[in-house]
Amino acid sequence: MAARPFILLSNDDGIAARGLQALALHLSSFADICVVAPDVGRSGMSQAVTSALPLRVTPYSAAGTDFPQYSVSGTPADCVKLALHSILHRRPDMVVAGINHGSNASVNVLYSGTMGAALEGCIAGYPSIGFSLVNRTLDADLNPYLPWCERIVRATLRYGLPYGVALNVNLPRREVQGIKLCRQTLGRWSNEFDQRQDPWGRDYFWLTGTFENLEPTAEDTDDAALRNSYIAIVPTKVDLTDTEMLHQMQGWTWE
Image (cartoon, rainbow, N blue to C red; front, side, top):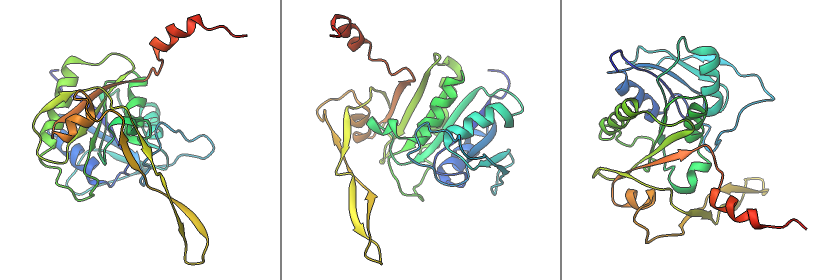
């Protein structure tokens, strides 16, 4: 691509999150950037959209950046939809979400607002990537990961992606050993809520949970790659149809 590519960035941790700001600043060295992200954290929103409340857009500035940024009073998917429809001055070459603080490997992809933004981008017809870091610490050192993110962005710009496919990219906690193309780990969350009491003695529930890998010996999954300090890249489809089950069901009777 001869001209500087134009990249739309979003996330689910909020526009002030270090992961988003560090990635946007790094990519701005070779691409034109526009950031459109939630005004506050909207983790776990998946691809939720706002339909019963007005959306408000506010210009945002961050120290050391000179590219346009806007905060939106909505979800990550709202941000991408609104950016593509009403904010951007031209069509982007790519939609990038992240860097998310926390893993979006395995079943987490279904809950992730970061991947919700990326999937919204690919539904609109743009090559889209969601980046997530296994380390949830908000002040984690992002510098070692930024050149790897750039490589993945550049390669995706060069080769492109089919319609309806986004890349779910998870970065390991420890020093990166390389990149592995993976499938999504079969897993689930258990023990998901703590019952607690507030200072007035009223019960409430707090989301917690333990991740359970249902195929711990498999070596071709994103969870296995991350455990071995590799970047895990999973091509993720919008189409959730189980074609094998669809064929099996042709023999069902509906009596």
